[in-house]
Length: 83
Image 1 (cartoon, helix red, strand yellow):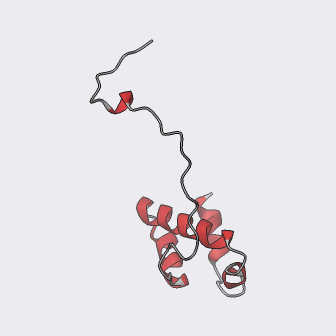
Image 2: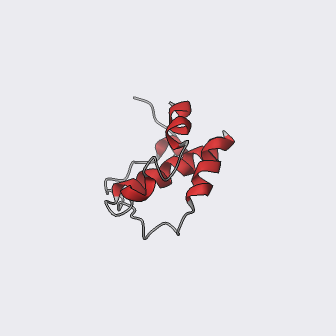
């Protein structure tokens, strides 16, 4: 078994507690155009942010209608480009 120094990142013990699930009230009101532009940018941080926000907002049943493909043309193509 490997032993790491106490101040080393590898010596950190994982926390057993689960994080609270974020909801739409935890994220500021986000403009759909900003999500689209973040996905189009191709930058890793922007893309990760946009996918995280989409995941949080689509988990809420009240927001699903807002992200319909008729409301956001091009969203499906952008998501498929990333996968």
